Image (cartoon, rainbow, N blue to C red; front, side, top):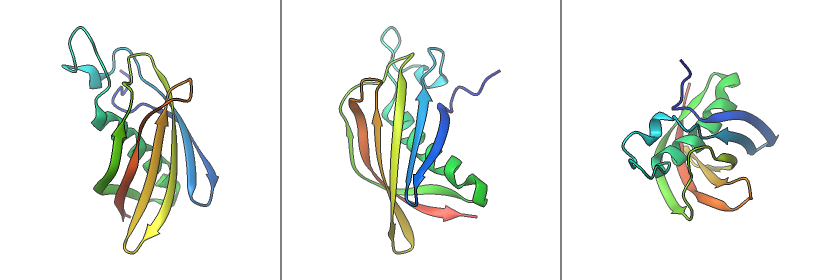
Length: 124
């Protein structure tokens, strides 16, 4: 059985502090369970998790991963629906002991559906 919690298909480093990924939202994703019967939309926490997945997949080669410690300026501007193809763009910036990651998730038409910043601590 496929892991339909994790939606990221491809991660590419675009520079020192930039990553980009593609994601697909399967119609049968576990994220839709109860959200909402008859009119499913991808929950906001799934979009934030998607951004964190991109960073963790990008760091996995170094044997590191992150945990989110704070969210800032998160905006949900459109719903993500079953079957959507999404793009995720991440940029990072050092912020003392934590890193700040700006993220933008867009649909196939390049319309932003979610954006924001999260602070994260690195775990080895």
